[in-house]
Length: 331
Ligand code: SF4
Ligand code: SF4
Image (tube, rainbow, N blue to C red):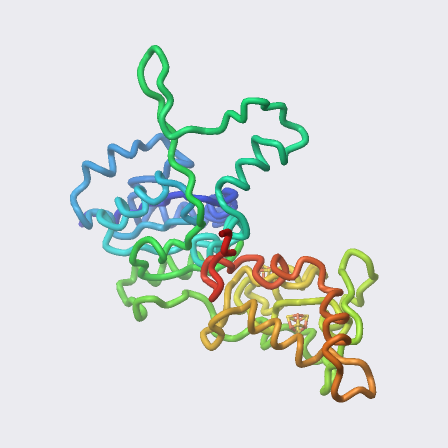
């Protein structure tokens, strides 16, 4: 019997999700025994043409990581959708827009000015030469993929069957997901293949949270010596654990928490949370207060909230493109 055919593709991301496949270590040999890898341009010399020539739905499952930011990524996402029975959105950028999604606080022109123009102090480019989709040279035409104004998650571009969350996905979850898919015993379409509890629910520091939590001052992890056993929120350090799905480590504590860093939300929201940033702001607002003051003036609330350095990057670090805001209005 022919083996199931598997494809891996990389859109707008750092490459960590490709590393996450390698992090399967010796388990990758088991995967290779069970499947035929028919497309993985990051690891081997596959050509797009090979995929174009395949029959529709010939690939059993395509794992696509990275957000969609360019014409090429959009085209490949559509092509892989057409050629695959199942598409798995792999990793935080594909699932939520991820770190590239923070680009939605600007537009293409502002980003180009920062990279190639007057806003980039290390670039000398008086004619403001920027990448063009088509460049005519004596030998013919050179082309580059168009760069979009707005970063999108994979499911904002194509139909997605399953999601494996995380920056990057934990190897044990990836292996579990591969086994589930290969078993043919498929969960409901749209399932995020990770636990449903929030990170706080599985975090060993949760029990150090006082019954009535109240924060008077926001502390930054880089500027204080935090207690490695205490809940970050109880120390006034913002941790996105209350609105983040658990599963980044098999042990229950988040991977970041285990090395004494607060969670930043890369696993995305648990099922009951629609917009993680808004939910976290609301959670924080409910625990911020000055001792003895039940009703604070707007001025005092604003003063407390002003202590949050980079609120957009803190509350929407991984999820801006799928948030209710999606992007900043530029005009
Ligand atoms: S807020 Fe952070 S440190 Fe506190 S219990 Fe939740 S995940 Fe753990
Ligand atoms: S602790 Fe939070 S930010 Fe860190 S890996 Fe886990 S889900 Fe991601």
